[in-house]
View: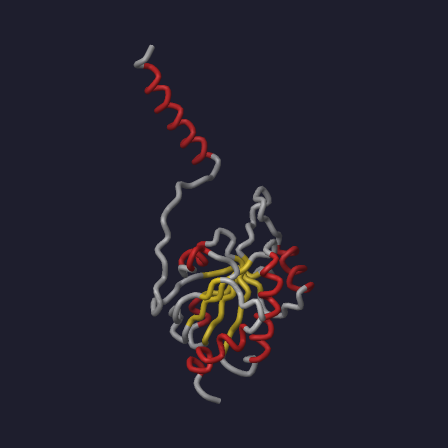
Length: 189
């Protein structure tokens, strides 16, 4: 009888793993973090059904503001992000709000494209909303502690510039906080 118990445990573990794979779950695979100066390659879907790729963005300075519609701080973040986009509208700066909300209706953090468009409208966000539903890009840029909301800057070559900024300034000064870095990357005007 005692010899059977370890075999049952192994069989149970194998059965659970097989069922998880059959259900579409994949084993966790570590994601390497991007380091400052490393070029990112990605493709993110917009809530309008299009796609934005890293190749499309080469030549422009890019701000990716990661957040989630369920996170109260993201409401403050989107206001600051829109102010930043407005302030630099006449420069070669592209600003995107990147939602880490799940696109799986079974998830507790699910948000449909329509719900994200409503979130953007309610918060007066006029810039494109991109989707990173499994957080692959967010994890790759290496935000300390995976803290949302967060901001990442990409230079004209598509490389991460500096350390990602985790959290938000409670005084809402994102444009001021980033202006030195952005003006340096964009060149004087």
